[in-house]
Length: 228
Image (cartoon, rainbow, N blue to C red; front, side, top):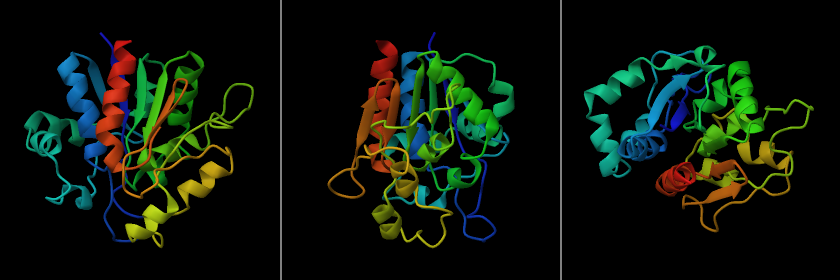
């Protein structure tokens, strides 16, 4: 049985503000749905564990697709989001895929999470799949390999663009520009020609998606990789 660790944020607001954020729901649900259909095991974990806040924007009717709506109405799934596992408990467990779901909350609790860095490094260096989507890519920016090389150095990748932050009206609330952080480590940051459209980039066993609209393609790519 293939095993997936889906890493999600436990942060409910933009820093010290009262503006709510959290996990962008579809960035978990599409992979979760396909993994369950395949009979794969998927564990949901966060930096602290416990309650996983959901970004209210991701629950708006025009963004809540059939799969996301169905899971959001599923009591077992909702219980998993209330009781995510702490990443410390996952450090020495083996998975076939480490998947970092997005949502703005990740910008506050992913980058400096030592347990997350350890898990990513351990699995990447063993040739396992490491994937991140949207703001979840922020969990990669401080990961270094055992020789001190940044994991994303000179890698082809993507992540939520600065123009998309402007479109989303969040540029004044985020702690940094994810696009700028990525470009500091690699000249191969890629993005879709049109903002808020799907983009998935594969570089060996590192797979990244640009935004929530990449969720469906990202899930399909990852499941195909796991099958193979």
